[in-house]
Length: 329
Image 1: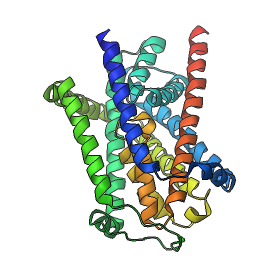
Image 2: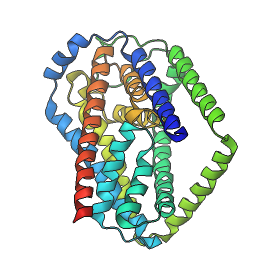
Image 3: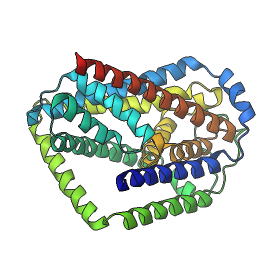
Image 4: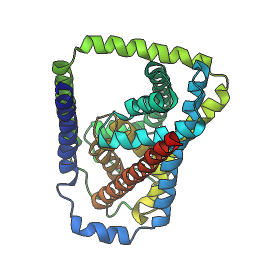
């Protein structure tokens, strides 16, 4: 009973954080223009972005199979891919539970010990952290003037071919910094009260190191790195391909796409359903800095995030049904 209550509280806090941030992002948005904005979109580019959204988890499943093989866990590639898709959908319903679902499914269907599969997920997260760190450094170095102006509170407009005449002045970023700080403090207080923080930090460090060491056992390291690179390319293309759906955003360029992608990737670290709220704020704010009108930026973020969420839920539901069918067979 306590565990159920704890999970309900976690989900409630996650939804509350998401709702508060979404309110601040869309409090001045005219939703009556939403459908007219969709009607003017080039939806072919959106379908391409969603295709990249589906390829990313597929590559992640292939990569995970390479991590499972060296530790003596022979899992069919089909099962690892379907399990990853199921985990993506679970993360949308309950943030951060997807990894636990992945390990539990392998334990049930393929008799892979939970502790072993969880160790491989730690290794995955380590590699993803390195990729995100490299992309963040590249983004900050190449766009350092923009970030300096952002934190200085200047409403600078960047980009070469964006239509800047209709761009709206973004809100004072200091307001959003205070909101972000308040959210982080609230999360910290909740975690500190509910758990023994120091023990969790030590446990994470131990698991992190165990996962890092397991990477040395991979037999096909070049293929592993190729899958990892492909995953992050797909993540980036999800964002950049969708730019071409809206005329005013299509011309901001690939660097702006990288900035939005990195900002969105960092934002989803906040435990909300599929990053709802923090992701919208990050992407909308970056697009406005590149000269995109506030309404177009908000519409873009809302359409892309909703479409991606629906894609992950649909693919996850299909994968879950397929896994049950495979188990019975």
